[in-house]
Length: 306
Image (cartoon, rainbow, N blue to C red):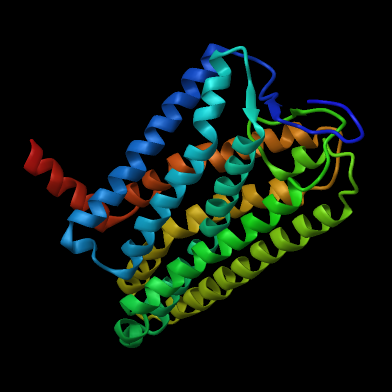
């Protein structure tokens, strides 16, 4: 970092967890390897098994891809910083990390909303399901998720790194995220803070309302079913998605919408660990352990191999 009439930052330092504990390195390494294996396995399973060629699994395949991408944007660098003394990241590397992470994190929320719409149509309008959830509609929903993620990430990244940094170049986090980077700026960050609140709030509220409406309608429809077996079967198709949604939105809301406090940065590190590292590992487990079709497909592969 050079000083003059203005301050030019050429690199940042990621403070991380303030420790180089080897135990944490091993824990996070195991979690990351599990995430990579689980999500790649889910993608390949859906691609190869003809029984999983439905809209729900088409969305699930992209969810696995998104989880794989955004955990890979932050975890390898975090693992490296556990075992090396130099915790620096170049200015360009920080820009790219935030851009990739924010793109896929936002896309994740819109994809979960699209999956909720899929369950709504499947349960509330089963006769129209093949007509409504066509391949073209599914592709449009997926594309829309990626577009919204790209727009959101581009706005945050562009406005964040257009600021001047003169206070420090040490980021109090284990990856480049907007709030800890804004804390380093000597520019007026009011617009950035407003954008963060408005865009994150909009993304959470819009996708949350879509999911809430979908599942309220699904619940009403299920309760109206006369058959107990039918109710159980209909509800079982939603439990995996509901579990993933609850963990995802609970963590994300806590990360970005919590009130300011003295421990806000440390709280964000814990929440970010859950959101960016643990959840991508959990999703393949949730959708495989609580999904009959996926379990049958896994058994089929297991019988062929062994």
